[in-house]
Length: 422
Ligand SMILES: [Zn+2]
Image 1: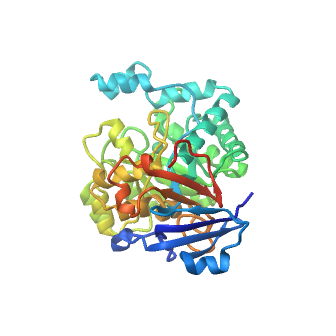
Image 2: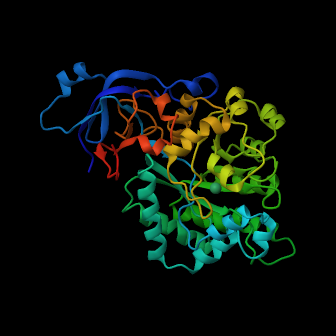
Image 3: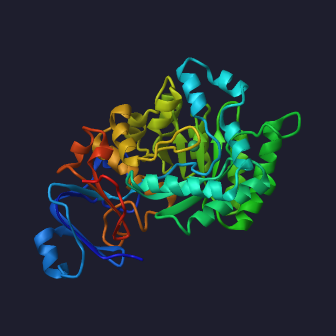
């Protein structure tokens, strides 16, 4: 399946060279551009990057497909490190209600919100869920994505969560891209859990039987836990994370999406690989935590669609020495699949530079998923994943609606079908 391909004559090749760790601080903005360059892929692996004329002397076999990237920019394949694409039901009505002035509480009171997706997903047929998932993954590819994280979390019982992880595993057989699977039992507190303190009762279940069974099942690559005022407290999340780490399952955290909830501090203190959203994380908390290995994943489309009155302070996170990644947050209430457009939107949204946004959607996202040994940069030895865009310098991509400039998406040396690409 792995392909041979020579991408030649590119005006710019954006390497984002991997130096062995996620980029933070000043290095977040370094993308290592090579001009008038080629990328040589054999058996799906990058074999050489450098001046076209020089590389073609060694690699210019007549029977290898050549992609002429004259006037174009070649970037690493994008890595979407936060998505929830396995769900049933529809939530567009509640967005329309909110745009017409309804509050979140009003939408929830009439049965909307994540809980409505849990009910619909539990009731949906497997084939229906898998068909929708496949269509979503194909759309992600058409937005430049060559590897994606996919979460469970619309089941919230032991059996339904294990089943959703099984479906995500089955999706790997037909997925055009690598999937990293995350167990998200602690997404929200289910409304049908019994007891005087449902949050505590459900935490006991997740931190006990549910995590144990998920680890025994052996599908999940990560466990994700929400830290949010009204859902899981820092103490409850820390218990779940500790159980997960004790069983060898790495963790990520949904943090501070709706209110300041000490999610960032909790994720870093517990040793989570990443913390995501961070919309309401206080500047004082960012300062107090300081530089970290925990990767901050910011989600600009979520802030746009949720109409939050704050944005994550991505600028302060970078300047503090925190590696920054960016993702779509595709889920039942956000249907953005183009990470290319999300990445370019992130620059003005957070006032970060194009180079910082590119690192956020490639190398740092790969580190957040633990796939950096094979993806996330155009380094020799990594998989031949690339995005080709119709502009001579990567900065130019940020001046428009990026998908208009998408020219090709390459996965392990194969060009993926992209309708209307130039
Ligand atoms: Zn999410």
